[in-house]
Length: 131
Ligand SMILES: [Cu+2]
Image 1 (cartoon, rainbow, N blue to C red):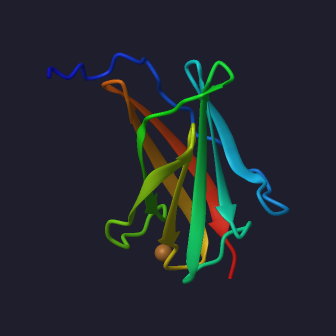
Image 2: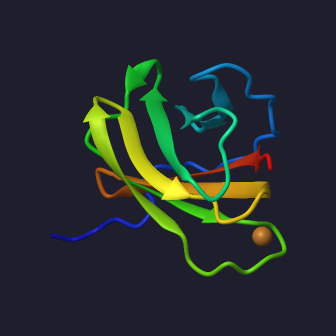
């Protein structure tokens, strides 16, 4: 099968950190072309050095973006903690979950990549892991 590299012209703005207060509040929500992505952490805010559940919700024009392959690459700006990739599994249509560890307290970026129908969608979320 021939793969078309980027049929969906979906590029992402960096999302500003929004205060995540309360269980299940989205860390950030971003729009990419016609898609909307949001990332939640449980607990919220996330903790460092303990397992965190990441839940990425993806929708396109209000409908779940189902059937994608999704990963989250965790990194700290200006630091090299090595690769830290979380593979997300689809738990419900358009809802992707996985567990990972933020190895240090401080600012983090999570780069989400969704592959869907031969296309690729990326989004960067920023958040803080408190001490
Ligand atoms: Cu660090």
